[in-house]
Length: 353
Ligand code: NAD
Ligand code: TYD
Image 1: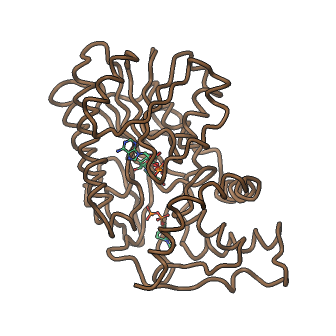
Image 2: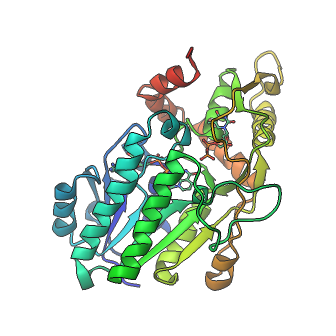
Image 3: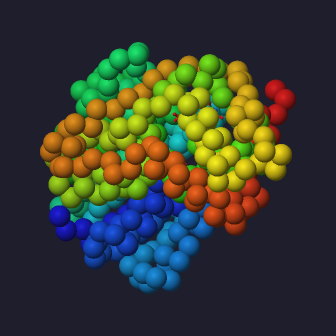
């Protein structure tokens, strides 16, 4: 498939920035990337350090809110955008429980604006790839997997807003013939993830000897997908995934939260023993459960594997080691994050009610 000007929304966030590194450095893509990001608390230009210098005019950054239809329209026409890979979103469930409004604007209205702009470009537009989540399917019991046929049953304001955007994307294909594809993936982890999410939060707190807050009984299950595997899956789907279709992406790594936290403690004790030789497991603190906390997510990615030959390369054991090493080696990035809104979030979330 021939893309010349690929707009990546949310390219300064966790997955979007990994995707830009991957596409420019590892795929042979010869076109231009236009990264559009509002730079919320989760958007960090440091994630793309060196990309502008290395790729010159093949990489453009535009600070813009996807809810600003006029501003976005100008970017579409200035850069002759012929494809979109849409990552920009409010992405954290706990924040959506406290303050859902921005999730409705960015995730629903923002996606609607992009679809309208793509539609207006008619036959100049070749692909709208919508990056979504397995959380749209709701919660599983002890057995079974989410497939592409699982009915939507979102339980948090975040997942409901993502579900709404998925429906809009699908409708633009059915109604207007827009060339779209949707991917629903499991929990990502890896470099550049903002430390409000489980894995980077636990790594940083454990390094600093702070409490490790585990929600409820710690037995909730997530499937974990190494971010680079996710990027490779998206690129594979963009090349040859059936238009109008959806693909589940999973990491083959179902884990209970408490097991992950214990693993992080043990790996850190191995590579960076705590000063008093204390086991970091002692830092684990069970806290009040998240309201509406989904019990289990698990993904069947058989369609993607059979149709396009993709499977994750990383096991959880190898991916978590790489991730811990990255956080230990990138202290400047962490200091940068910590100097901003992150501290306010931690104070609000874990401080007195
Ligand atoms: P993130 O929160 O790290 O990054 C989101 C990015 O979007 C940030 O750079 C932010 O500045 C930008 N953004 C937010 N609102 C914007 C707006 N109105 N206009 C322009 N830019 C805006 O998120 P992430 O973890 O990288 O997730 C990327 C996508 O993948 C999201 O759509 C999310 O729903 C989906 N997803 C994430 C996971 C995961 O585990 N992180 C799992 C499944 C799906
Ligand atoms: P999170 O990283 O927020 O991703 P999501 O809610 O999108 O799955 O949380 C992953 C799991 O870890 C989820 O079951 C909630 C749990 N969790 C904790 O137990 N403690 C924490 O401090 C956080 C942030 C999450």
